[in-house]
Image 1: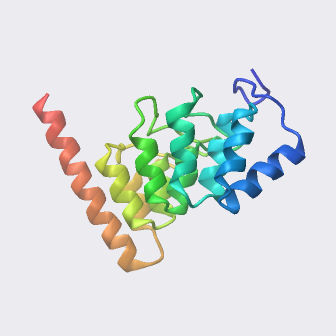
Image 2: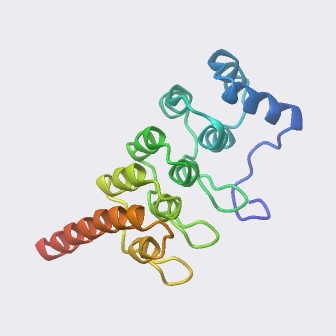
Length: 181
């Protein structure tokens, strides 16, 4: 285990990181694939794709062709899903949430889930995608705030109302499902 409690991944040289980031930003899929095949850690690559990428084929390559920890957390406890949700990349979010081994409600070091990242960033389509895939809207962060309370406190009233309606609907569905069990 590393100092952050995570399993160690190969230590990366600055040039390796820059090369991968440049391949992602410039949509150079061939170079990206070559770096991954040369054993660049997929965990770090996924985080970088979710932070800097705009082409879903990079994520598809990782999840379809390589075996790695899709729930790997960076220094702040953020996963690729956290980053994709916070940036509102609904296509990335959908691909990640379709993976069987994804922990969609994993908390980061501040106690936030990917759904909370999407709500905080006012990413309405991403919030809807998370809720459709079953992300739990009732979980609370370190400040005892669930996604609904976070939405209520958003500064832009129109977006916060849309998000509030989405979350209310999800909570209603959750409650109904609990009663059915």
